[in-house]
Length: 487
Image (cartoon, rainbow, N blue to C red; front, top):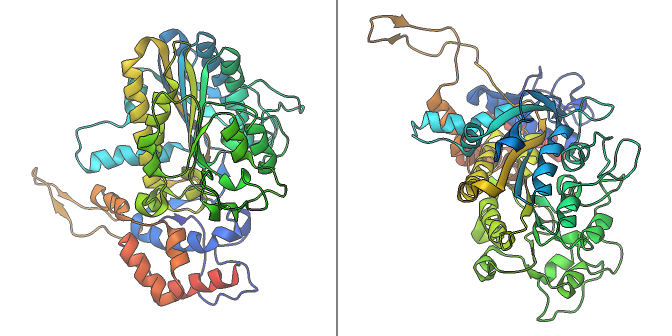
C-alpha cells in the first residue's frame, strides 16, 4: 500500500505507451509489478508511505547479534557484509549453536515498522530486534558486490555464507569463479547438525548460497539435485516443483506430496528427488497439520509446503494453504537440531519481505517484518536458555524499494490547543501514529487483490474491503487497463 516518488498522469493511458510512472520508469519498476506499483502510488497519498524503486537499492542494512562477547567484538561500526563471516565461523569452530536469521530485503525503514507499531499501540514491550541489540551489539553492513554497488541475493548471500565478495548471480563462488567454503560446509565438517528454513524456495538464491557452488542462480533444477546430496538435517520451505520428476508417477499410498503438485514439476528429466530423500531416511511432510506428528527427536526432516514459493505472510491462511508460519517452523527446527552437544548451524530466511517490497506493498511488508520479529522472539528465547553456547545473529542481504515515510502536502486539520495554552498548527500533513496503525488493517496483498479483480468496479470494492483505503474510478480503470495489456 505504498507509492513511488515519481511524476505521472493516470489519464489517457494507451497500451502502446510507456507505463504512467514517469520518464524512464521501466528502469526502476519491472513491467510485471506496474499494476501494484501504480495502486501503491495512489494509496501513498493516504498512507504517507512511499517507495523510490521497485528494485534493490544500495542502502546499508543492519546486523544485530548476541552471544559471547569474544564473538561480538568485531560486529560494530560500518562493515562490509562479507566480514560477518569471521565471527560466525569462529562460533562454528567452537561448536556453538549458531542461528542466522536473514531478512531478504530487510532495510532500516523496514526495521522501524514493528517498533512504531508498538509505540502507536502504547504497548509496553520491545521487539526482538531491540532485545537482541540491547543484549549484544549492532552494526551497519554495506552490501555491494565485488564490482558493483547494487547487489542481488546470490552475491549478497555468498558474502554472508562464504565471506567472499563476488559477482551478481554467483552462488558460493568468489569473484574469480572458484568455490568458496561456506559456513554450512564448515559446520558439517565439524560434525554439527544443520538446517535451512525459507518461505520462498529452498533452491532460491539466499539458501542456495550456503550449499552450492555455481555461476547461475537460476538453474534451480540442478540446485535441487545438489541439495539432495548435502544431508542437511532440517530443510523447510517451498519449491517442491524442482524436486519432482517431469512425468507424474502413478498414484500410490507412499507418495508424501499431493499428486497435483507433480503436475507442476519444473524439471525436464525423470529425476525424483523426493524418492531420494526418502531413501536417505528423511521424514517428508507438506502440510501444517502434519507438524504435531513430527517428533522432536527426528534425525532428518524435509518439509515442502508449496510447489513454488510459500504465500505472502499476509495471505497465508493456514486453513486454506496448509502453509505453516515461519515462527512455527523455527520452533520445530530448534527442537530437532538441538539433540546433541556438538552444536548446530541454522539459517532462517524471511524471504517474502523482498518479494512484497518488489511489489511496493507496504501492508504485506508490514506483516512479513512482524513475522520476522516473531521468528527472532523464538530464537531469542532459545538463546536465553542456552546463553553460554549460542550465537544469534540477524541481518539482511540487501534493501529493496527504498521504503520511506514522508509527510504529505496540505494542512493536517484544525489547530490543536495544548495544555500549556500554545496553539499548535502545521502546514504539513504528517503521518500520525493512529494513521500509521491503519497499515495493519490490510488483510490481503495488493497482488492478490489485483488477481481477484476482473473489473475496475471490483478493484475499487476490493481495495476498500481489504485495505481500508479507497481509490477513484479513474485510477481503478487505469490500473485495470495496465493489468490487461501487461504494459
